[in-house]
Image 1 (cartoon, rainbow, N blue to C red):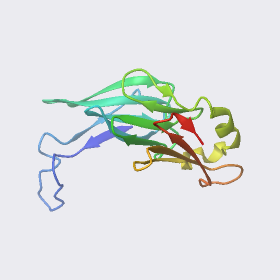
Image 2: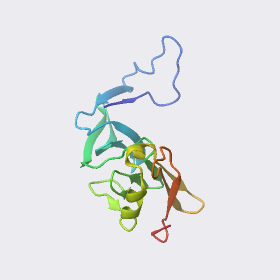
Image 3: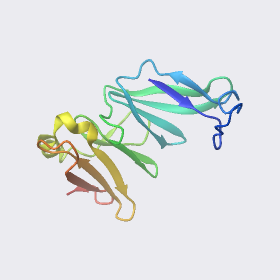
Length: 168
């Protein structure tokens, strides 16, 4: 549960470089992260860290600390590294029991309520971590790709049209 960051700009891999000795690069353990750290996405001038069962926000403070980390939502997270995606000023995520959009703060907007029963009744729970989300910018659609039945890789796509707030 360690978050690491490098110095700003392209990394130099040659011997004797200062990329990790500059005082700006570093690492911090997130002791209150619940489960494995699955992915990180940009949002509202910071980074959202999605653990399996919690959501944290990382924001720049500078100085010796460089970054600050705050648990925003306990008990809810994402089951896989590709189960969340970012588009404009919102993150979308598949959790173990719903589909949400997240604008930051302490609230998740459950956009999957109307299809939750159907999605999770067909989803293969042992392969949920292989699911992935993508955003079709041209169509303005969130694509939720899940494995169903005995499939271990996604074989069904649920589509959420953002403008209509409708699923198909």
